Image (cartoon, rainbow, N blue to C red):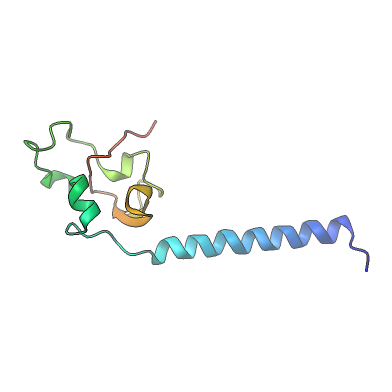
Length: 104
């Protein structure tokens, strides 16, 4: 059976779309990081950046939060999104951890 270029392209777009949609669905179903998670404790993660221990985490500056961190894999307006620092579990946009790196 001979496959045309058009059939191949249409099939490829369909497969790519399916994969993209399934990845988005997975991200939305990923568990949320809890503050008592061992990785969260090691990185000083807080669900609310205003509750960061400023004496312990001296590099923290008001206005820093996960929503404007380069590791945050969602839009700043998303309440939660995956973060590679936490094995792609979801972190709060208003959260913070010591791995914070300002988004360029």
